[in-house]
Amino acid sequence: MAQYETVIGLEVHVELKTRSKVFCDSTTEFGGDPNTHVCPVCLGLPGTLPVVNKTVVEYAIRAGLAINCSIAEFSKFDRKNYYYPDMPKNYQISQYDLPIALNGHLDIEVDGETRRIGITRLHMEEDTGKLVHQGTITTTPYSLVDYNRAGVPLIEIVSEPDLRSPEEARRYMEKLKAIMQYTGVSDCKMEEGSLRCDANISLRPASSTEFGTKTEIKNLNSFRALQRALAYEIERQTEVLEEGGRIVQETRTWDEGKGITLPLRSKEFAHDYRYLPDPDLVPMIIDREWVDDIRSSLPELPDDRRQRYIGEYGLPSYDAGILTDTKELADYFEDCVKAYPNPKVVSNWVMGDLTRLLNAGAVDITGCRIRPKQLASLLQLIDKGTISGKIAKTVFEEMFATGKEPEVIVKEKGLVQISDEGAIVAVVDKILADNPKSVEDFRAGKERALGFLVGQVMKATKGKANPDLVNRLLKEKLQ
Amino acid sequence: MITKEDVDHVALLGRLELTEEEREMYTRQLNDILEHFQALERLNTENVLPTAHVLPLKNVYREDWAGQHLSREEVLANGPDVEENCFKVPKIV
Image 1 (spheres, rainbow over the protein chains, first blue to last red):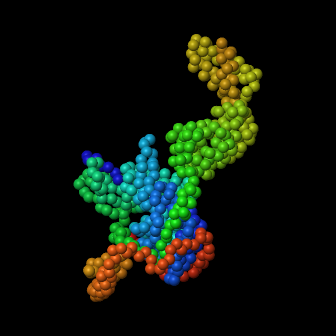
Image 2 (image 1 turned 180 degrees about the horizontal axis):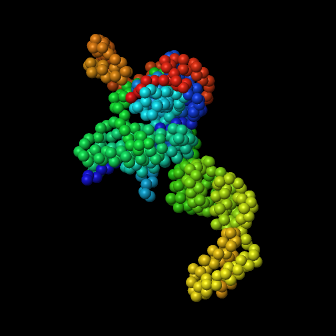
């Protein structure tokens, strides 16, 4: 069997977090009853004139700088013509040959190695309306159109064909999402469609430097869909090539339910957009001072933050990577460290128990009921010896479920650690008397017997005995 | 030179159904228009940048404030067919 190399390029759409649409003052608020967030401009009614929202240009520049692009000195908007009812004008205002930002890159880590992925361009455009089909687009008898989203500002970020696996594609998109969130230009809510992706994918013999024929996959609205659709497409294309067939250049759609890609009839998607400069919109000469101002106001980005965690907090590179993956998690972590200045301990709790509970409950860190100050209080209770590390895990789970203060939970459930020597001695004596065999074993040199006896004392005290004290007292008595 | 096939292609992109007479008429008319504009080819444009806009204007922006919307009745008034407060359109593909 011939070995094929996979070549992937992504086109990522990011909805910008402005108040109003890109060419009119209709709200960008998500949802709303159908066709209530529209005005004559975004409906494309005759006689209306679009005017560019300055914040959109600013955000596009900010996003472009964050992914190391050059910002154009001269940029303009063009009309992209196509026959599809998701835009009432029958064209979408986009940017063709003079996009706002060009030639950037971002770094991803896959299997411990850093790979630099080129970014061809970043351009501004308007989002389209939403079509509701009965069933799928190919089987529905008719469609319903809601134009609330039409005209919401988007940036499209086009990567170079530098990605070599579905895993890399996923990492790239996750990184891009993190950067966009850090810069504050988008909330990147994939479930609301504010981060979306189309993928171009082709295969070529491993030794070849020429590209094979590609297909474009649309409708990839989650990281999981992206990775699954690409894996499926590799399998499909490999099969076609193995059988001596040829790949048809076409647009395909990802069917999440069936787990397959399907061709969209190519005639309707004829890539013949007849771009022309939009005569309603005047060119933009991007002032260098403006660009410099935006550059100097860029926040700390994921890579820098990660380096800081390694350098300043002494965290391992892997941990620093996970903690800085999303801005929310990194902010949470830092708030905890502010209240409890031991980054390593905080990191262990956040990456261990907290992540486990978040995953199990399918909750986002933003929906976490444990506030950073509360986690700090819990850790202080351990330090003070009020509760043991083991009991702390029980308290933590309760905090996660109820959002209560750790002190309250400890009090309510009577979990205060027993550090009264007299009380523990009594239990120790009883356990020793009840387990003569283990005592004998220990004295005969079986160290493991001590562990068993400690366990028995902890059990008898419902885990509340101070473990250090239990160990010391047991050893004293056994000598 | 515009051929009948070009006309068919453009008609498809615009979802126009043309009779044989119309195909011939538009092919002829479009060629006439093209010929008329060929006068421009006599100019030397070697050092002229493509025109992005015919008016000497640049950097016209609006501030990011949300304003008034149309009422839904007004929005849907021009729709030939409406269902569930949406525009109803024929099968697309």
